[in-house]
Image (cartoon, rainbow, N blue to C red; front, top):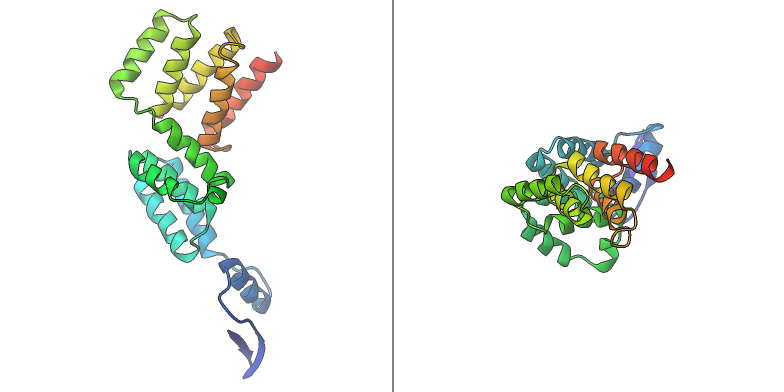
Length: 210
């Protein structure tokens, strides 16, 4: 790959290069930053995912991976989209065929946490039964825990956080601090910037340090 100016070669490179290196090459020639199409696609996909427009987000993540097949943010996003579209078995197959190294990358590991929690397979009837049991037994940490897990599975994020916070506030040591442990898994699955994670971490800090 050669760049010419005034009919004379001024720079170049050999062999296939990642998108970031190619962009740096052009930015050097242009004398300023050039917007990355991948970054733009990822921003659009993230926005669609936040709005739970899983099909649109999935298509955008696929577009990223067509350009950069090892993009960990896009891989993690695809897993989240499949979970959101109730394609849990397909997501599990996708994850099981990944390398151990890839599964440990932060965006992918967080998405796998979301998948594992979704694999509990809670139905709407299960959620209502868990809610009724928790309301009838407000001091029973197991009932609250089951309700929180059911809420998570049905994407009732605020309710899931509140159930685990109640356990931490009223019976912190129950089941080896299971309420806090599970709450942190929720945050990991949702991502650190999700409103439920932000509010949940604030509530957790209030409980732990009050």
